[in-house]
Length: 346
Length: 238
Image 1 (cartoon, rainbow over the protein chains, first blue to last red):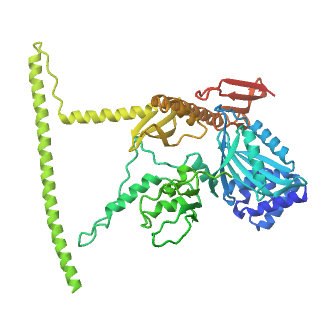
Image 2 (cartoon, rainbow over the protein chains, first blue to last red):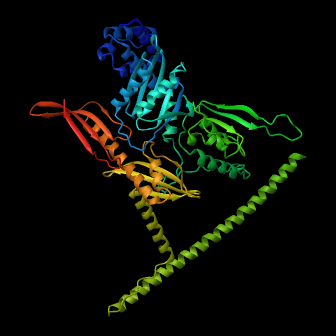
Image 3 (cartoon, rainbow over the protein chains, first blue to last red):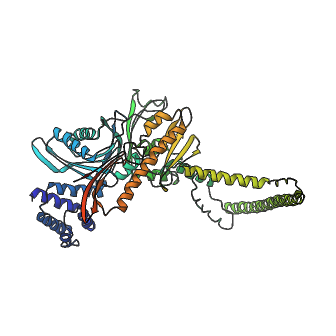
């Protein structure tokens, strides 16, 4: 077995939390049950990874198997990478049959015609997600397995989720190959980025819970009425206002879990508005500034702003439109009051 | 001082509250009594109607047509509520139902295949100037844009019917794939290849005959995405 492959497998196993190594290696399926029995998973990670490499040696693991292990790792821990969403455009209105084998062939062919030194691996999952791993080399060097791009694509949809490699020049090659393989004619960035791949999918596939009004009878929720306390009749302060905030919040955000995004960025190119007397800027130029919101779970924190009393309800539509507009990077220009500008191409 | 003043205000508030409470209790009592009066009046009407009916039946024995009992206002309303509920239930069961919203209508499309209810999808429409889709939960591989372009402005009924066709067919195909994987897992060899629309299926399966087992390759093509049955099936033996 190649030294480099052995090292790669060892390093990949080391990335996995110790308690989960067994499950991941089982999912990989490259080592037999008998071989797995011989590994003591309670040892230190270093020892476990050495043992795994030893067994891989017995089975003569190659780059392909190592790449599959890497895909499985990234599929289980996708939030270790930042994902950007791209949208492809189609010329015609034909409904395609989408043959997976055909797609894979076309992708490999197109990418290899641009750059031959690449390692390309595919893995399909039950939810129709196709994971593509590409390790990049140069025209004169072999592919570097540590410099990888990942693509997740659901057949017959125009959306692609890309986690690019550090080499910026590889992104156009990747896009070109995708467009060719899936029979679209162009691709553009959607200004939607985050670490939670599943949340990004929920946003573009519209799987997050939107608050649709229906007649279908929903079980009525009991409203807890706080007991009136004490000697004097204490009335809850601002009860009407609190109820209004709840109602407005529910209309905008719904009741269910919200997709998880970590930041929203607004690039402002609007004029600075001030008193005539306080002429801060002599030139009538837009005042450029960047506003960035970040949070472990931005939409959830926005939902709790008004009930916590930190903001007025309803919140600005610039914040609440994020799931519906499927973007979290905005450009706001001066045009009879601020409104989200058009998207920026990659 | 201030504290004494606050105490006095508190006591005043307390008195005012007590008075208010009394007044409310009296009003409630009055309401209850009024309701009781109405109930008794209704009862009286019903009993009167019964008596009339019985009398007329007595007379009717001699060939006179008896008048049907006058339905009371309350039972008419109850009947209306029951039939509206039943209507809403029927609409839900037919698969397409709608509810007016502030800015338009929200339609709910339910899917089913051979008696099993599957997923529900929503389309929220704005009906201000021209009809627009405000938001929806239609899967992205269903050609909603195309269907809307053709029918949304001119014929909403047709739009909903066509969309419902697409969704039901997709739900049916997907359900069949799931059932196939569940009930025939023994016979299927290897992974089953499908796509998002479930309109192309490729799989290998075992067939035993006279103690020999054959491995067959099946390819199912669903040319019509409004249909949950394939248009082309290829079975080959490797």
